[in-house]
Image (cartoon, rainbow, N blue to C red):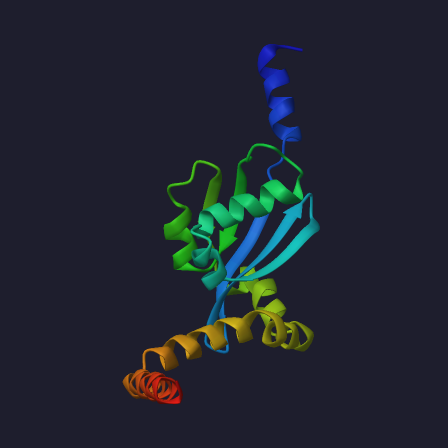
Length: 167
């Protein structure tokens, strides 16, 4: 067997993992939905809020690399194929040396849409992921309210005056 034939045999045997991912909205929040495949078997199914990824100071390409690395128990990242119908994922992963992104039609990434449409998953997302972000957003919005700040200042000043009169 010549060197060329050996090289060809190793390239045929070495198959890269495939990630089918999409960015989908559910109740006003954007989610990264990703499926990880190896040799036609589903290895992992991941649904994570993009707000959480951004909050951690990470990017979508870093999150996808981490998904592959963790599910294959690797110390170093490996190259993989990405099928997506999202322009956001293509633009964010174009600079990564580990990701070969391919823009596909929505019908070729339909498993992501089916995943987010699952009623059990929707219930879990409402309970676990969306509520803390919604509460945090509402708390930030309420905290910035001028009337609330003025009311707190009046309350604090009144308590301070009452404490001085009591002494």
